[in-house]
Image 1 (tube, rainbow, N blue to C red):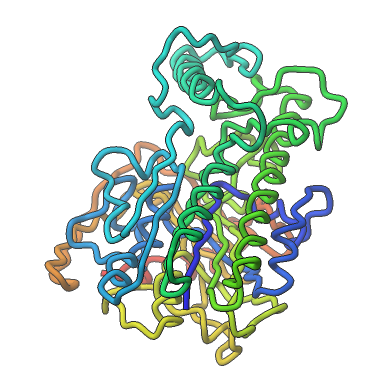
Image 2: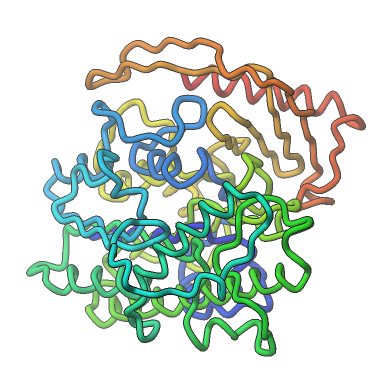
Length: 462
């Protein structure tokens, strides 16, 4: 059997047809969802990009332990376990932050291809390449922020200056490189591919026709890389609609190329002997109200619905779970145990995640009662089917772990005092899905119970 994990960065769960969206075109993933199991209650764990991938590669919760950092020497990774069991593996990605020096996400893979040029990657350094930043950028009056974003956008535009069509786009490069690796394998079994696509992460620069797919009459600047932060006083309503339309166009572009990838798997007759997992690491704030609590991009450590509710679609080759929707809470640490369970392999004993196969086969209704999410040393949150609680405690536990081959000794100290602790927040998810009406004063007992469970959960992880 084979395993393929398709990661798409920053994809909001409410931006798929199969998750109820009625205006964004995602026909390929909608088709894939029809023959797969769709998890409706998947939530991020540690945020953002790098902590999530650490969780995925280790099967462990990260938000109480570590933030944005390299993998530790004593982490036991999914690719390493599979390599030791004789699987041929590849990591193919354009996720810039994974290939920064010493991050070590390539560990355990037989083949690694880092596709360069995303975001501010210093890839093409030829300053003679002229790029028109002002056609895609709007200042916000914050000199430091706008200078940083302008410099990043200038580098990005140089990196992609040679593009002619969507065939050159990063998502196309990732898909074509992945297919090239698969097609050149002499045996089409015992393969493990981690295809990590940075799109639809910003900059949101879909080529024609995707750039006008959701704003056909727009004549203003294409704000492909807005300055992260508050939209009030910065982006007009028209600007926000432009950003939202470009993001949606990027999503349809990614859907097209993932469809090309899946169709080729069918042609290679690999579709029915491969476990395929599609997911994202987190969503994306895109403006006011349900679009993003008044911010654009991941400018605050705010674990609200638009950021932490993620898509997860799994297709088993034996058809188990096909065409079903699952309402159980599932999270990124569950992916490593699921892959190992599917392949009949034992994993490290200190994984926090649980295999999702019993959910797919309807042997169990749930594997946990709550979903837990956090930004390291910044915020924690907990969700039930009815409630979500967000906590900014005055102190947060920083955990030092020693894992010489096994879990080893663990110690905990309190650090990270906040100068002004924010008021906790409680939302009724059934009446207020996008978490806009804080009910913590109306239901203090519920808030206290959820905070206690959140504290106890973190203590159990130690």
